Amino acid sequence: MISRAALHFWEEPCLSGEEGSGTVFFSGCNLRCVYCQNKEISRAAVGREVTEEELGKEFLRLQQMGANNINLVTPSHYYRQIRESLLLVKEKLKIPVVANTSSYDDTEVLKEMEGFIDIYLADFKYITPELAARYSNAADYPEIAKKAIAEMFRQVGDPEFDERGMMKKGIIVRNLLLPGHVKESKACVEYIYKTYGDSVYISLMNQYTPFKIPEEFRELNRKVTKREYARLVDYALELGITNAFIQEGDTAKESFIPEFET
Image 1 (tube, one colour):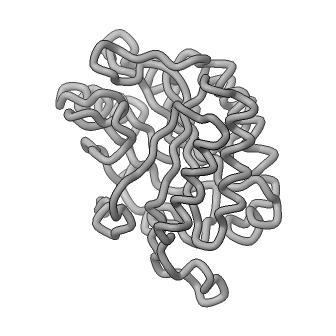
Image 2 (tube, rainbow, N blue to C red):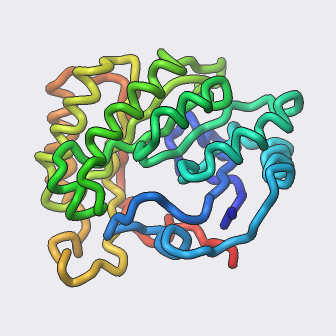
């Protein structure tokens, strides 16, 4: 089930470029993050059912529209169906395929995707089980995400770019800074950098948007402050990170949340 398939211009610059990233939003999610901005589709069957053949045609349609890549958003629970779709269009699809994932992925399933995914756009949300349990109902998230990212790196290795600076292969690891949790984000960033060095790009995200936050998590019912984000960026620089994406300006707006099909 997919909820949206369109060009998207707000991913990292090496993915969106000027032409846009060909994003396919899949309905459903295997996490239950209390701050999810896409609850409309992550918690309900919103969208339309497609066959593997129809999904492949969507990929080709986005390529025809000029997309720089095919961007699979929340694909974890559909990897095997996606693999079948990619098999059907492998002779015609000439642009990279991006797995835009929470990293709450089964490594055995990821192994089946080797050769089908060129770029992993992977979250590393938490490093402490307690926070993962509180905010995403998944105390095992840190352990699973570490193993998943290791498998992703084994598959695609060091980053490669074309002559326009668009990524052709590699991993970008994202960390979304949550209000009041600079220490957690610092620890996540430190783990990724000390494990993979400059072989992995790190994306430091300040776009957290408080969106229908339940009362019991009221500490998340505010935006990240400029000072909090500056502390995280300064720490990344102190670590020596050079391959990173840093957001500027006010990105915490509901307008960045796409409208989904019903």
